[in-house]
Image (cartoon, rainbow, N blue to C red; front, top):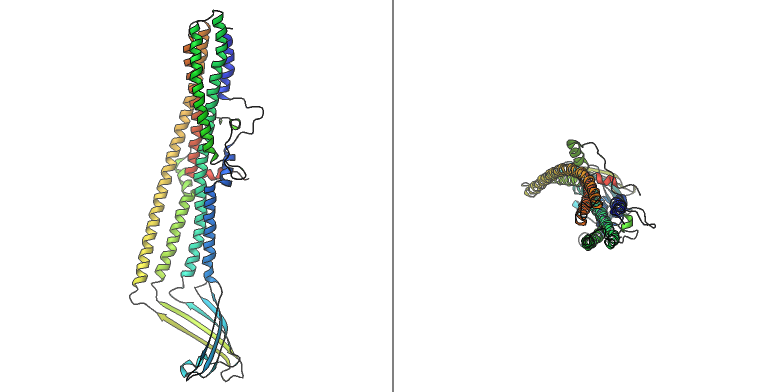
Length: 470
């Protein structure tokens, strides 16, 4: 068998370095969208973030409990100089408007009362009453109940943004693991095809040595290459298994259990395409508007603003307006309708507690502003770095593609020289290794470019849009 025939066989095997034929029972190729769906559906860390959203929603329910309808009831019996009995049942409803409180109920008082306590006396049938209390200064614009509700509402939104931030980070990590798995699988295919090439050639070289067509050293050198390539295949197999295990942390089944994708699910390398150069200013502006971690910090600042408003309001004096109307039976000596209005005033003269709370809240707001500014600076730098990485990866990918074409041409020419007796198996092996090395780096260049795109999608927040609907 001539070296020319060896070249024909080798040419067919070289194609396997780029597009290995799938087995007959091959499954559908694993896509990035498959991995992202699994991450969003079953990754425990994302489920943990969802529980944080549930907890924030529970805090909102609790905060709204400050506006629950309250029932107050009391009863007393006094024996002594004044013998009397008192009963009271009152419903009290805090309102979200102006911090007002409405109330209504029933009270009864019978017996003898002191002159200053005469209001407590009612007819035997008692008195139905209703009233309204409205703060005019402190507690009018905001109070603890409304501040608590506003804070809890912001907390729900912030937890949702933190969930999106967790998804953003885990999606990016999953895509990086996915492309590492693709690269390892393609490298394994290259190593396997390279070994097969040497093993097939060994049989043919043995025949050529037996016929005296070539020196025995040529086959010996090929056998050395076989041992070397078997070692490389074992290392490539280990690299692929490690990549599959790493990917299984993100790629999970319907029951949430990790799945290790097999080699037959390996997708083809993405086609090379030259897109338009992204505009840095637009990418940065979009990232600042879209990134959930930045949005979460803005919400944290809004929460501190609520605290500042509440603290500043506590410095105001208390001036409350109240009105109450009561209705007793007409036959009572105190029967008929009564109406009362009035004001209450209270002012701590020094107000040191309120001033201290205000200064503390203002300091916390300043910290939140600085934290937001730092986060925005980080996002800007991440976008700039990701754009730089994409440009560099694209340049490397184009250069390696040219190198692959040249390396394969050199491999073909070296085989031609070997067929004519002008080369050795040692040089042919070197050319094959160089072509295989170029093929491996071509795989890496493609997957590194995809990883750089994933980093850019994370920096801009667009990776969340890559998850298709279920």
